Every structure is written in C-alpha cells, then in structure tokens.
Image (cartoon, rainbow, N blue to C red; front, side, top):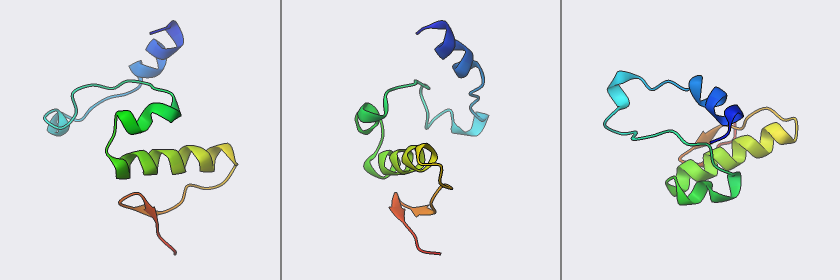
Length: 69
C-alpha cells in the first residue's frame, strides 16, 4: 500500500458490532470489486462510482438493482 492508500484507510472505521462480518478493508480497482464482494454489493459499488464519475446523484438501489422513485 502506498502512502496515499494508508491515509485513506486511516479514515475508515468499523463499528464494533460488525467485526464478525468484516475481516478487512482494502482499496481495489473498480474492475476487481466483483472478486471481493457479493454480486449485489459489487453492483451497488459500481453504480455509485459510475454515477459520481458522471456527476450524477447516487441512485437508489435495492439488492444492487435500481429502484424507481
């Protein structure tokens, strides 16, 4: 991990009640997120990043699928 990654990771905190669900936090390229997350989680992450890159607001998702308002 480079120095920039270490700084970003310093801002990530895990609540005590999720330590049995989360083992680690790691920054990975978007294209490999599906290798590290469940399908619906990978879809959520990808949708959010694509929306932010396009300058849009984040979409409402349910189990990783878009929900119409």
